[in-house]
Image (cartoon, rainbow, N blue to C red; front, side, top):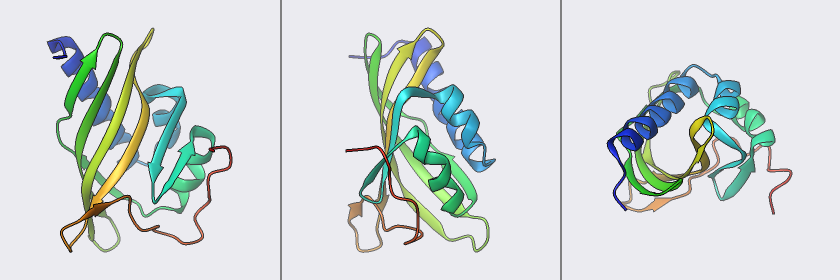
Amino acid sequence: MTPTTDDIVELSHLCATYASRMTQGDIDHVIAHLMTADGTYSAFGDTYALEDWPALVAAAPKGLFLCGDPELEVDGDTGTGRVPLLFVDQTNHRMRLGWYSDTYVRTADGWRLRTRKTTFLRRHGGADSGRPHDPLRPKPTSME
């Protein structure tokens, strides 16, 4: 179903705010204002509940999250999207390219991310969920 202009604007703002706040290291804002209470983040072959996400972000490289406009599908109060992603590590300017695959839910406070899954583009021409940036990164504690 085609999203309305209002949905496009609000979901685009949601995705832009995510990129800006992640660049600033403000995971607390992302969790409190952009995600649903049952939200999850998936990468590196694992899915992380919100309570696990701050430790994962703390172990990750810091840098610039640059996202393009989301490709959206909306059906009433739910939706899906794919968002182009470029991450640039601030310490060495190495880049990670890929996209987010999202699910969205309209809440009383507006649109929120329910799930966000990262897929990385590889030099060999393939795409996958990524290699762990830190082999000692925290593993999810509550996801099955």
